[in-house]
Length: 254
Image (cartoon, rainbow, N blue to C red; front, side, top):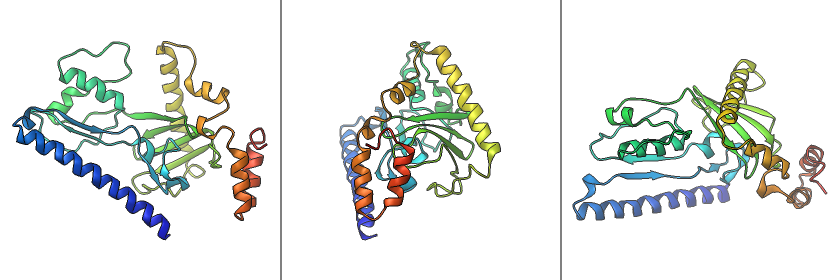
C-alpha cells in the first residue's frame, strides 16, 4: 500500500505542477492586459485509472475514469459556471467554430452547444458511446447515472463481456450491477445498436475501426504480450489467474 500511496501522491504532484504552470500563463496574460479578451481552453486526450478496474496509472478501458476528460473554458463575455450535460469532445470543437463565427461542416459528428453555453444554460446529449481500442477493445454507453461497458477483447484483464456501474453511488466502479440489472444493460445495448447504425449510415468509409482492430489481432498494445504475462503470473503465485487467461485467449497464449 505504501507503493500505491507513493504513486497516487506522485500523480497528484503532477497535477499540481501542471496547474501551477497554467497559473503562470494566466498571470502573464493578465500582466499583458489581454486576459479578459483571451479564450482559454484546458482539456486532455484521456483520463487515468488509479486502481479502478484494477488498473493503476494508465488508461486501458472505455470506463468513466478514462473517457471523462477535463474541459475548462474561459470565454470572453461568458460567465463561469459548472455544466453537467453529456458532450463528446468533438461537440466542443463544433462549439468553438460557432463561437468564433464560423460554420460547422455538415458531415461532422460534433454538435455545437454554443448558444446554451453563451446563455449559461444546460445542454447535452441523452447518452454517449465511448470506445477503447489501444489496450482493450470496448465500447461503453454513458446514460443517466450509469455506464455500461461491452468488451470485445478484454486486454487480458478477464473482464466480463458486459459490466454496468452506477457512477453516482459507485464512482470507483467497484460493484458490477450487470447480473442484477438486465433492464439497464438492455437499454444500453439498444442505445449502442442505434448509435452503431447511425455511425455506419453516415460514415465516409464502410468499415468499423473496432472490427479492423479485432481482425488485426486485438488491441495494439497487448498483441504478443500474453506469454510473458502468463509467465509473470505463474512466477508470482497467481497460477490460477494464468490458467484462466490462457483458457480465455488460447490463440494468444503460446
